[in-house]
Amino acid sequence: MRVLYLDCGMGAAGDMLAAALLELLPDQDAFIERLNALGIPGVKFKREASVKCGITGTHLSVMVNGQEEGSHDHHHSHDGGHHHEHEGAHHHEHGDDHEHAHSHHHSSLHDIEHIVRGHLPLSDKVKDDIMAVYELIAQAESHAHGVPVTDIHFHEVGTLDAVADITAVCMLMDAVAPEQVVVSPIHVGYGQVRCAHGILPVPAPATAFILRDVPTYGGGMEGELCTPTGAALIKHFAAKFGSMPAMRVKTIGYGMGKKDFEAANCVRAMLGETDEAPEEILELACNVDDMTGEAVGYAMDRIFDAGALDVYTIPIGMKKSRPGLLIHAMCREQDKEAVISAMFAHTSTIGIRENKFVRHVLSRRIEDVDTPYGQVRLKVSSGYGVERRKYEYEDIARIAEEKGIGLIEAEAMVDKRF
Image (cartoon, rainbow, N blue to C red; front, side):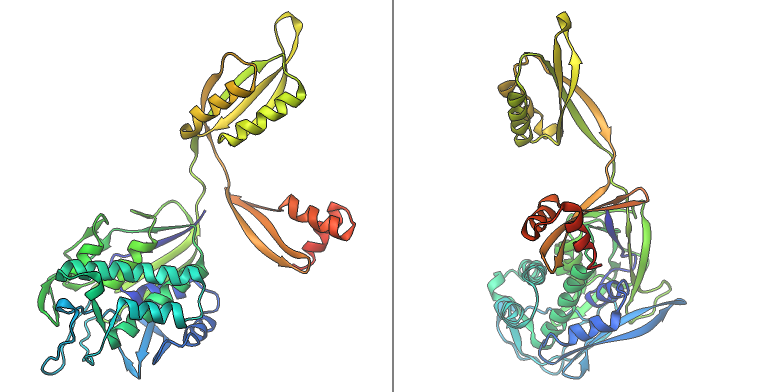
């Protein structure tokens, strides 16, 4: 299984996550060009080398109308969602320890959705991911300020900056394509953070709300280590939290923050392969000696329909020297009752035996391959140090029939494209 492990021992922010994931790609400059071609108003991405505690990584800077936002995490909602004027500039300090003046223009969640769905040339999946992350942030701000989600407004400059970070991470997740994302317990820091509304405890209320049910810890480093954007991105993509699983690491990325601490201020992304954990399955078996071949074939189809993972027969000798069949059905625990019912309904047996087994399997996925003869599905199985690839029979058979050739020749034609 292709697993992405995110080490958040120094928290997480949107720019740090994006930079860590960017380092996993073979052509980082091409991806930066792709980001800059999106057309997010006034936004320009730039990849920079950064060194923290002797470790070299990447800092991803986002310029909004020529101004670098630094922390990349400005989602200041206002009481009741109104547009307020403040004397002078207001500031929000983050784990990257930068203060920034903002213009007092605001965008609603609807405005952000208009930008994302109406103007960004992205797949529906990536757009859905972006908006799901923003929904988490809006719900957290709504809870923190006691106003409906529809009244939550975000500062214009901070909004474009956050849209840039969130979009970059969602696009990178799609490009890296992990089958599972595992995240370490998240270090949130400690102390206080200053924002437009005053001085708040760390983690900030919105961050704390997003990270409910997520393993977190504080202490060690003073400051806001995990920002609302970082928290929302992790909450959306993480399948599980905990220590790094047993995996064969292929690539490692370091996404750097701007502030210097005693510890390296970075998110570390590790992409690798794990073997599928063995799973418990059930074997249901029965003997029959009075069914026709057609009846057995029909019964096997119905047992598959009931949820069996595999159904097969073995010829056996039964009482009075009668030839018979041993019918095996393999299934998961949750499908047991349905499979047993199907076996009783469609075979002549009056008893079914049950055994528990542990099975080890390769990780499996299907890739769609574009060929001059149409799209062909490629089944890829990997794990335990091996990888197997096989074209879907129906797709190769279709090509063979269309071209009037044999299966072997059709498969060879598809292989030539590689």
